[in-house]
Length: 274
Image 1 (cartoon, one colour):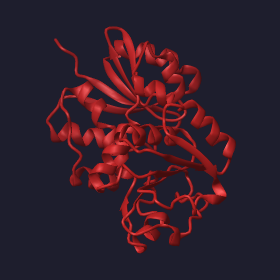
Image 2: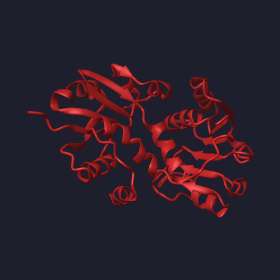
Image 3: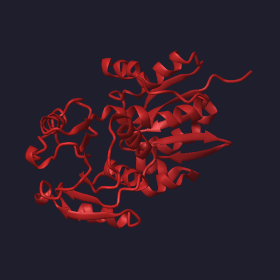
């Protein structure tokens, strides 16, 4: 008798994750017999938990903070993109081995392509130098962007990221110059937490954004950030951050449950309602 496939999301904390609603919607929509559950796992328990999951019927898990980097180290096999980004957000259990991947770059670029006709032959400006910025930079480089201008409040962190991604066309610039260096850019991406609910505002002069450029914010709480509102007022094309969450989930679901799902407006509504 074949087992009912189990998947989930591991983190600490994990109760806030919208992934169970996202994957649960797909399971119902496609009539798939399977389950997707949130799993609160402490850092000290991560390796034991991952090694035990296949025996419990798990085919894979998504990984959220603070486990993404540690999961990469614990994996038996690592995809090229996960190695470049330096973190894993998707694990699959196959033949007794842990396979690690990172679908954040895929999720970012698919969300951007679904929401806007961006000019990937022009430079891009990326705000922030955390883990999300790594995935965004890799995605933009793979899309053919010739220059990725990176600015962060702490320049040293941006320089460290640029050194790690030395095969990407990254130019590090000062945070104070972020309004000036947007000139000529086709895409502006905010990867910082600035502008999130409960976080300090992102101070970016609206007048620096030119009509027609694409502005996206990976934040989705709130969905319509002040940056996006300012950008629309300047005639920019805006893309919210929820689609990145939805699209990054597609490859894992396809591997675990054998059905490549679609990101639809109905799915967005279901996740937003949660």
